[in-house]
Image (cartoon, rainbow, N blue to C red):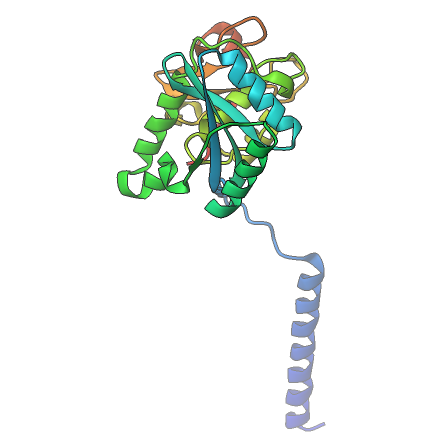
Length: 258
């Protein structure tokens, strides 16, 4: 056998080994990366046009209207407009005209009286680009503080007929233009994890209060280790400290959405 034939056989064998190695690697799949998983920030959907109604002197009346609207399949919240004055907002429409048509229909049915269409530009989140994220965080805290002292009252949305913790968090975010999920478990999944020392005003803090390993409670972090939450039936919405022995023991983590 000539030298050129030996060389050709050698080259053919080398090529065959190379192909076999490629096939073996493909079968095994890619080697998992050992680098830490990046915290992917998913922005919350922003609210479109909403409908605002009422000016109630009693919070119970605002809660009753919000509950009636929810019975009609509308996402309704009530809130403190001014001291001792409560209003209701509901819906989420892509255009002002669609919101107006819905409001007119409800007014014709006697469900609501006068109404006002709230533009997406009116929300704090719409001003974030101009004033910065710290502005939006501050507005979320201000909104949460307006609920302090209100009774635990949330119509039919809670099994305990109360303004439950996740309902409060959802309301505070929606009043600033961010469509936060309704339930605490979904809220927990939607956010980006934040270490305790990195919490910022406007983040949410979660707790496992029933000892079953599931998130069952949520509050709005307002700074200095404090958070605002609906503590439970028979209690007013209040501010508590993360350093208290009870909340420290059942703390499940903090999440950011901004």
